[in-house]
Length: 119
Image (cartoon, rainbow, N blue to C red):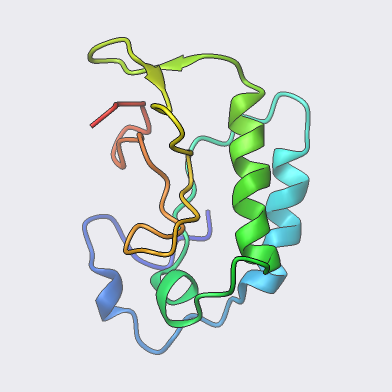
C-alpha cells in the first residue's frame, strides 16, 4: 500500500509534494501486473503525478496505462454487479489515458469495496 492520502481525505491537502516519483514506482507495478494470476484490484495515482507533472502520451507513465488495461483484459469478462453489463463499456479503458480531468484514474471501480460498477 503506497497510499499517501487517507480514506475520505482530499489529495489537495497533500503538502509537501510526495517524495515518490512515478519513475521509481512503475517498475514495481509492472512486476506485479506481469505475474500470472495477478490479484491487483485498484490503482489510484497521486494527483501530482496525474495533473501537475502530466507526462506526454509518449511517456512511460502513459504507456503503463496500456499494460494495466491489458492485464485487466486478460482476466476475462468483468461485469457490473448492479446491472450485469460487461465492463469496461465500449472503447473505455480501466485506466483512462485521455488528457482530461479523468487522466490516470481507474474507472468502473468502487473506491470503498473495489467491486465493479458501470456508473
